[in-house]
Image 1: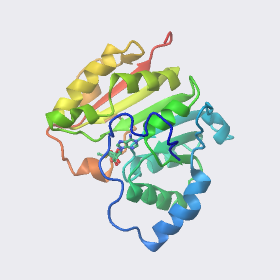
Image 2: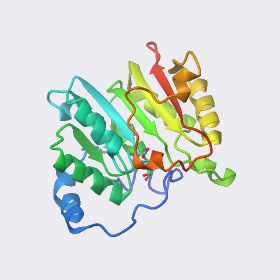
Image 3: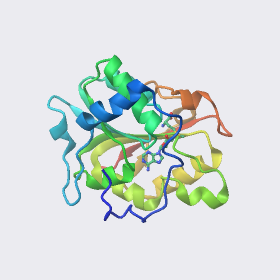
Image 4: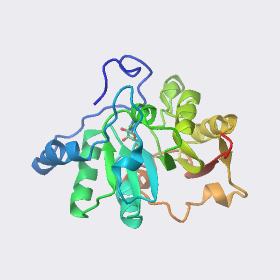
Amino acid sequence: MADPKSRFAGGPLKTFGRRGGRPLSGRQRVLMDELLPKLSVPIEAGAALDPADLFSHADEIWLEIGFGGGEHVSGQAAAHPQVGILASEVFFEGIAKLLGQIEDDKIDNVRIWPEDAREMVDGLANDSIDRAFILFPDPWPKARHQKRRIIQPDFLEALARIMKPGGKVRFATDVRSYADEALERFLAHPAYVWTAESADDWSKAPGDHIQTRYQMKKLGDVAPVYYDFTICEGS
Ligand SMILES: C[S@@+](CC[C@H](N)C(=O)[O-])C[C@H]1O[C@@H](n2cnc3c(N)ncnc32)[C@H](O)[C@@H]1O
């Protein structure tokens, strides 16, 4: 759980809105009380966690930030049983939904960080993540709120530290101003190499993308963009 002394206690701006929504169902409350503690990522202040230690048979470790209802996490976990996935979300209903999918589908390769993803990133070892997904993050469309967007230079620096050289990062959004701002920020950081060669590479959903209910609501102002970056070998 969040360390009250961490830089996130009264520290940087929140990148998310509310954490609570509708009351959880009885089953969801049981999952939160009983399954979540067993699956939580054991981040501890002052120690760097090597996530490979959490998955005895994983070939790769992936990370998803702000998983919403969890459909992308559970879909990728089921499609790639040889991968271990660290998944972070702060919205209680979303966490409970993912726990339900994990139980229903008997998924055993997902661990959950039910707090600010930036704390988890800070608590992971250098060069420990093969793939990261930041899909349709909260867009904060109003100009005065845009400083709350998660794609900030210091976050990209923190993410680059935990990514393996040659690792992959996918960012997607359907909000034009965020698409432009995020691309500029990724490209300003030397670790992120944009691999697109033609418009199809960012305007068409990648073959391995899994749509979520949130994406299908089409709440943005443009068709989705998908930016795939490779982490520079020398970073
Ligand atoms: C707009 S939703 C999209 C959810 C999901 N990625 C999808 O495509 O369906 C963004 C989610 O990110 C979560 N979020 C925002 N900031 C976060 C943070 N710092 N750590 C973890 N989750 C965060 C929010 O709670 C919200 O559920």
